[in-house]
Each structure stands twice: as C-alpha cells, then as structure tokens.
Length: 418
Picture 1 (cartoon, helix red, strand yellow):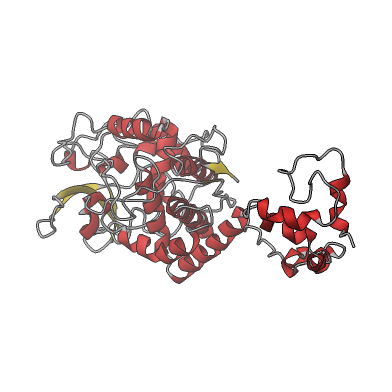
Picture 2 (tube, rainbow, N blue to C red):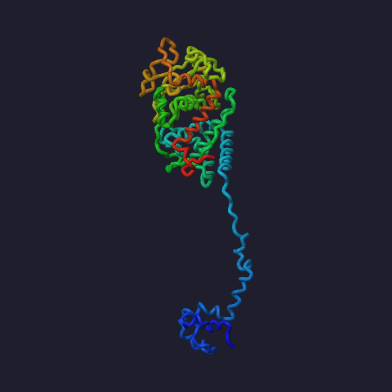
C-alpha cells in the first residue's frame, strides 16, 4: 500500500530530488526506501515527524486553543497596580506633617526656617551643617526624616519637596490667632525639586544674610539671591513674627522671639518697628497716621551679647526692648537687619562688629537714626493691615521655596505644577 504522504512525488512541479527525500523521479512505491540512504542525515529529523503516522496526535491541540496552555488564558495575567496619584501622596504627607505640628508646636517656626535656608542658592533639600548659620536645623530635619524616607522612594516627591511642603503648612497652620485677618492659604503647587547629591546635612556651602545689614545691603541680598522686590523683601522679613532666637545657634538670646508671640503668624513683628496703637488693625494700609506717630515705635536699646563661651559665634550687638519696664520686663529682640526696615544705618554702623552709633528714638540725648525711606512706609502698611501682609507673605514665601527653578517651562524639566 502507498502511504498518503507519498502523493507529493506525483507533482510535476517538484522534480528535484534535493528538495525532499520523497520527491524522486520514479513513481515506484518501493523506491523511497532505496533512496533514503542517499539523503543527508541532518535533513531527515526535520521531515520525519510529518511523514510518520504517529506524529498525527501533535495536531490535536489546534482545534481547541483554550486548552493548549494554562498560561495562555488572559485572566491569568497579573493585573498591574495603578500608580498612586501625586496629589494623594501629597495629602498623606501633609497629614503626617500636621501630626508633627500638633505634637510639637515649636516645630512650625523651625520648618519655616529650614525652608528658607535650604533655598538660599536653590531649593535642593540640603543644608551644610558645617556652616554656623545653619546651627539648630538638625532639629526639624530629624523630626521630618521618617516622613522623607517613607515618601521619597517612588512617589515622585523629593526631600526638597517635603521640606518645602512642611514650611508652607507650618506657616499656614500658625494663623490661629492672626489679629482678625481672614485665613490665607499657603498652597503647595509645584513638585519635582531636585535634591543635592551630598545628603541632607552636607549640602553646598551658601552665604546667608548676616544680621548686621543696612537697608541697602538687605535689599541687595534678596534682590540678587531671590529676585525679590523691595516690597517682597519687607513682607518676607515678617516671617520673624514666628520663632525665637537661640544664643547657642545664633548668638542672640531671645527665647520670647521678636514680638513675644512666637507661635502666631501675624503682623506683630511690624508692631515693634512702627509707632501707633498696636491693636489698631484698620485693614487700610494706605490711610496711615502721620509720620511723627509712625516713627515713635516702642523704644529699643542697643546692647551687646557676650558669646565668648560659644565656639564660632562672635559677640553680637542687638536691639532689645523690655516691655513692662525695668530689667525684669519681657525681653524681645531685633537684629540690625530687622531694624533696617525702618532705620537707615548705612552711615552709622560698624560692619565688623555690628555696633550702631545712632539711637532708635533719639532718647537720652542721642541722635535718632534716619528712617529707611525705601522700606519704612511698607512696614507701616503691614503694621496697620494684617490681611495685606499675610497675603503678600504667602505669595513671596511660595516664590522663595521655588528658588532655582523655572516654573514657566513644561514638566519635562521639573518642577511640575499640580
């Protein structure tokens, strides 16, 4: 009998014996066995499975593909887990930061300070702790470290983003008692800041504004390093309404801070610099008292802080006010840079020591320091209009926390806008 697979030998279009062992020039059924030895052994294995009757079961799976292989079933493929939206991650981080602030309200001012310091030279999530101007920042860095380690791996947030977010939340949350102003948002709108390669405590060394700046020097620093206008600089300095001054960190001993209300974001900082009723928030910074009233703020005396026992920190000259009178009053402080918003020391300051030769109000026969023409009335406006100041401060602080980034470009080059 002739095998069904031998039928191709009758085809006139396949005369060549080299194409197939069965395609011989004779039609004799008994010829194929005699032709087999002449075929190269390397070609036989590729043909035999198709000519052997025992190979037919290999065709059985084809009529029934679903049973061919369990792995071919689409329902068995792993379902990809969609990424968590960045907005959801930011909400989670924000909640954890607020919990930190609930547990320790003094962290608020420290987060605000950390945000500013990491943005001098560009917001990079790092501060150089070998720079004495950064002393004390290990406290907020360590406080937020666990949040940073949890959310910076695959979330799209950097350490710099989380530090900036903490600074904004701290400022926003400090409005609990802001002299009657309406609540102002401090929105976190941009993410994608780049962390420096050295680590949180070992960033590049930066030059910070010294405490003994004159008005011109103060404005020049913030214009050069942050692109701030005169008004923005005056608004930013109001951040000193928060926090305290630590002699071990800065050489200034001011546990009550600048205005004796160190946990509230209000315009109390300007109350100490501008004269008139400190409870007068007329919400109209353009309708101000006359100059003689404005210039006669509470009196400040220049004193020297002895820091001989603190490494790397020199003695400091600082302005102090003791409310309640006498040596036992509540002591609040202002640095020369703070005073430069309302007094022009340019011709009266020893830049090496910070000593000033004029007096704040001309008391005790001294010469009153000239008022700072470029900034005096802006500070007066903020004293009498807390709403305007908080709104302006929110805008400028948000701007500072984006230092070094172009927010006009697309998200191809971060930061990205939410």
